Length: 357
Image (cartoon, rainbow, N blue to C red; front, side, top):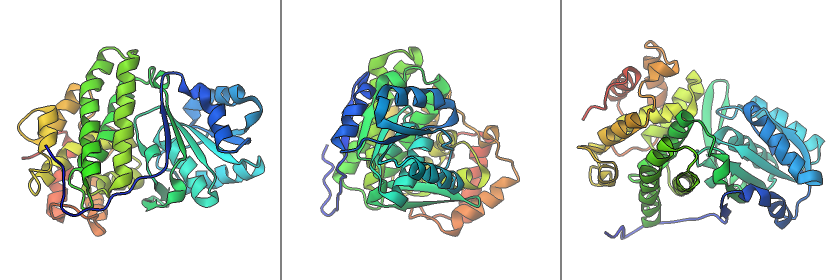
């Protein structure tokens, strides 16, 4: 099947990407390739030990460690991290972790243009983009700038081998959301479509194997491959309703990022299938089922993913406010975004019901 389009634009960033079990041990070489020698290591509090070990392994190449990265990249945390980076005279950033740590590195780079090396420990995929989402005063906003694109990504299957199964699943579904929305993106192109479909196939093939045996390095490596593909797609095209809803729910109601994506995705895909069933047909072909939204819902449920926003902390009374925020300045979307439709969609996602066809 050809993904040719008669008219399109495409872009790709110059990023050095390395895959391999144990590739993190080549970090010093990558710092040297950048011409740097004073790396600031970033992490979240739970990954502080890993960050400290990374710094110790680097010996004199690590100039400091900052372990307070947080979900949704709060501007206040970035301010503190930026002050620390300047105090230790860092000349590059090393982000060890998932989307929270990667986001912090991007936020610092946006202000300083320091080069970044990312060592992912989840499947978030944001390391492959030049997109930064930040939260201030309860509102999450995004920007796109070449300065926030990491220069190097090291995908090490050993670092996700011990990622808990529940986090593995929700992180994977978060990455898959990038690919699913890319299939109908307003500025999609043949490259983005091929990347999206291959990324979804990688997760469909590898994630069940990871659930069966979390220590399977080949399966873990293939899920990281899927994350890279899905993240690269996110850097190629614009997102639509799904990401608008998840940014609203995360930034304004402090819902957990990956889990929120896992719950909302099937409902938005089913909603948009009303407008572009042909573009979403690959989802049904890959995951099976009668419709793309239901296929994703059943796959997520079979993997043990959360299916209800109420289980993530959203209150029934919050739905109206969330719908209002999400429809106030909506992203482009193939199916028209109306307040009654979003109320209905969010109510189904809140209750954990299957997506309405």
